Image 1 (tube, one colour):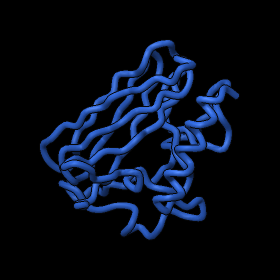
Image 2 (cartoon, helix red, strand yellow; image 1 turned 90 degrees about the horizontal axis):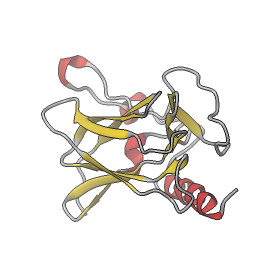
Image 3 (cartoon, helix red, strand yellow; image 1 turned 45 degrees about the vertical axis):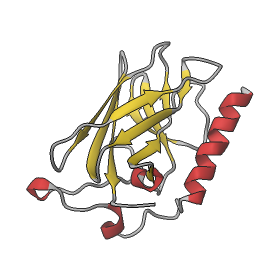
Length: 167
């Protein structure tokens, strides 16, 4: 396993542990979701919508959410929103993406419970693509956000619950 990839995976797991992720469960439903417009819930549990097979050459011990050539990498039993931090008047999180393509996927961030759009910045490792793609996601406000990564042959979508925090 290339050293940069190993550091990336160790760092991702360390952040998850530091933020209280647990593979023994994702907390109560009240902790995992909240009601948004129209009475739907913002469930940001790290769970695949359908069973997916492990992408070729992908690190094991990670849950992959997506299809085709594009996957978000998460920790089973945790929530995407647990990785959100508030820093310098902004909400952000690092969201690892695994791509099987030589180009980064297009990423859109849309608020589900009101108006708003976020932004994403991808930071390829020295090994380049295909492979893991560390990505920073920025949210302008608390709420329920849908993050979609579109590759050439696949799509990965997650929901992120951003809670009001001040530091």
